Structures are given as C-alpha cells and as structure tokens.
Length: 167
Image 1: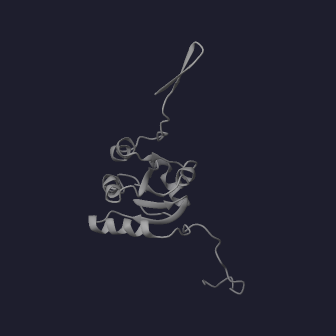
Image 2: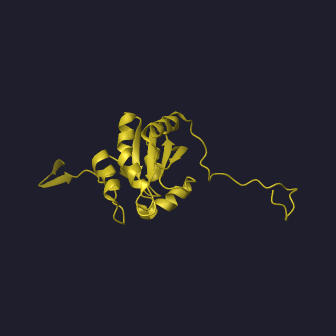
C-alpha cells in the first residue's frame, strides 16, 4: 500500500484486485487465481489481457458435475506452468461466462486450454491427459505459430451449387 500526502489529507493507493466471478467458482479454479497468479477474464477483458504480450493460456473448465476432468486440469495447470518456466500466464473465465467466451475462439469441448500469443489465437488442447502426453501437447502448442481461430471467416458457397446440393 502506498501513501501520499496532499496537504492535510493522506491519499492511500490500494493494489488493483482482479474482478471476481458473479457466481461462486470451485476451490480449484479460485486457487489458480489466489495462489498461482491467474487472472479472472471475461468477454471484455480477455483481448486486453491477451494483448499484454507473450504466451497466454485460458482455462475453460466447464461444469464441474458434467465435466469433472475440468477440475483435474485446473489442478495440474500450475504444474504444467512450472514445467515451462516463464513461458505462459494463466487466465480463467468464470463458469457463467465460459460458454460465450469459448465460442468466440471456436472451443466447444470441456475442459479446454486456449493458447493465445501476443493477442492472437494459437490453438486449443482439450481434455485431461496423462502427464507425459499433456506436457507434449503443451510443448507443441507453445511451439505452434499463431493461426486463425476456427470461428473466424466467411463460409464459402459455390455460385454454381444447386439449392438441393449438399456440397
């Protein structure tokens, strides 16, 4: 806490706290923020956070009841980060906002790790994996070039295709 004095008044600067999710997050998701420096993200903050530079990994854990492996991914994500020291920052999206944010990046599977670099989409890694496989998938993602998110683009339709054609 910093204190400045302006005349007879003391001005206190408190550190900025990340926004809290509207709904209660699981203990493992909250632990990522509270103990491992992850950032709470939403549809309006993810672009700014991603553009801060470097590799960024966003966890979409999914509903803990329907997709319990999402909690497993939340538990091993700090270990993956430790395996690649200084390589990526972690972001998490509150459960009630996950679907909308994930769809922006073409992610439709739970759980998913979304990889971004310098504000651009790189790839996703979905599901829970054995440790060696997970490490290799993360290494591959960190070595991959930026690409286009699967949802970006305009569908191409042939002008000569008939209305009854399925192609």
